Image 1 (cartoon, rainbow, N blue to C red):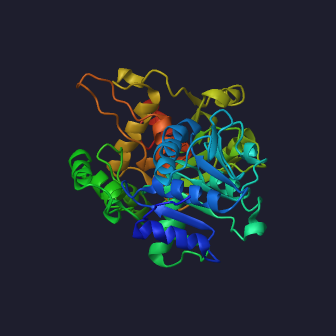
Image 2 (image 1 turned 45 degrees about the horizontal axis):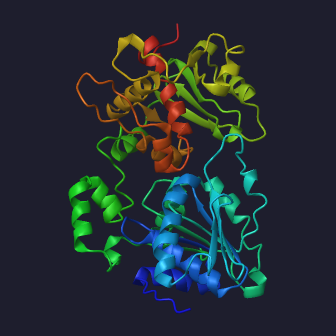
Image 3 (image 1 turned 180 degrees about the vertical axis):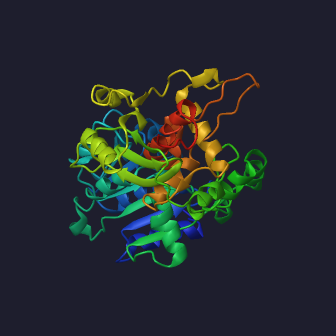
Length: 438
């Protein structure tokens, strides 16, 4: 079988990194048009044909998206161009989610989205993989990526001296990829087992000029900078409730402690503790951010924090959707927030959550919210930037924010820190700003 494949210079770097002795994590990408999906499809195909009986994990945040995008590229573009025919050279089983080659090698599909009932990804426990790829890793949580890595290097690696490699593709995003790869590479602190290959449409000579011209016409200026030029710092979107400068000012302008300010506690509740977040406030100053540990009980942590900071129960706000309903019977005077509930004061919002987020954005932009702790700073920044206004069709249309699914696609997980922060805004409607203790 003669395979004709002419990789770009940046794609060829990935093939070289596959063979070196140190690299076990590769991030490829930085913009659209870099032929990211074609690269991973070609690499998987070549390795499956090269090594008999290996098993490669092909992963994306959602399995349905994986089948509609990456698998289509694999079956409809790469295989035909390589002269690989169905039933002769491979079999495709969409039910089991795998491709089996004539020599016994397999490409196994795997979903990496966060499932509340399976926060530790126990569903990956039975996987035995040689290596794996994650397409559009910006959609995936770092936890999913880490658990997947624990399943690599467990199938014929010693037979062929193959590293337990993880190859990921992405567009610029403010999740774990930003710090672990982009920022570390920029600052020269990236460890030797990680490599970042920053590739954009400009690195792909096979793209027609009309493709790039069309992107320039259809994308916003910030999207051109981020998606076309691969600028990881260009994260601001005109539809974002706040921008990077707004967030930076929350940390740069210190506020003198004032013990006369009312103290509040706002909570994003989850009994899978890794998603439960508490914000402690003095007036509109955040003085502590707490993430409930895996060995802690959520309700006990809320009560203990309230006692520690002398916060009255009536100044606690929490989301009462789902598991949050459990708290009502124990914190009867706390503010139970129904995210899809009716907005307060008959304001023109789609629901209560959108109203609270718009109020949070307003106070942040006006410089009225200050943060006195650096705990979870990067997490909070990325989450606040992923909250977008939905474009209204008319001036009478209700104001709303992007959906939780859309937010997850930007940062790869639920914005638990931003949600917890927004819930405090209920008191801006029921009590007013900077209430002082009687």
